Length: 134
Length: 123
Image 1 (cartoon, rainbow over the protein chains, first blue to last red):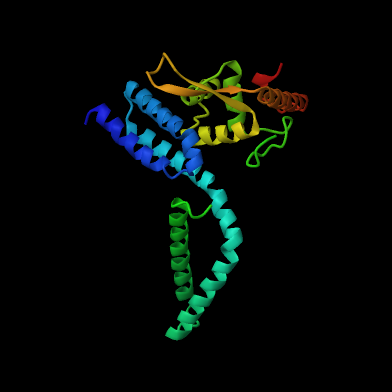
Image 2: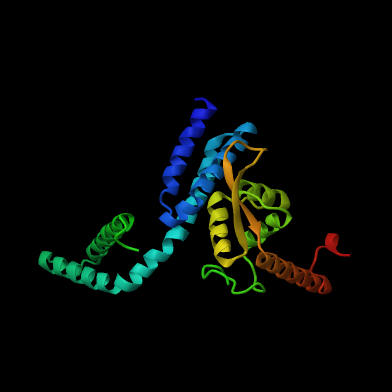
């Protein structure tokens, strides 16, 4: 594979990754992030060093940055709706457990809570991406 | 005024290591993102490798805090034809940097007084 094609592939993946930043952040820094990543790729290639190591480091480091930038809206949302959500989740799980005769099966409660949490989080992220939530 | 995400509240409060290094890199002249990264790497003799996520996250907070400002996009003749955003230190940023360096000087003075420094660094 030529260096240009390899660069293009990494740049494409990086562009997809930084798409997870909040929209206002992406509008301000998206172009700079891409340019800087491209500069790093070019520098690494010119030095004759391999790109996967650089890509792994930058992708990990940027993912941490995305989590940090995304944290506030999620925390604020949970502050408002967290109590209501957990009340509903506990009630739902308790009802399901009693209907199925699993009142004392802690693992069942734990698994259902995890699934409900995951579904709710994904739903929240989807609605947020569509612009319906902060 | 500083942004809520920063650990500082005024120009005399301590800076995070990333903010300190960025301010030092910009104290010489304005730079674009990659230029800041390379200057930090050079200043620290390669001991600090700042990635794009850390760099732009810090710049975001520093812009909000008024420590740096953006200048118009322009080309870097040493790189390519792309136009880039340059960042420059503000008066508040210079004040914060000076206060931080003074704090470091005081810490080193105390360490020297208490003979905590390795022999190689003693005057």
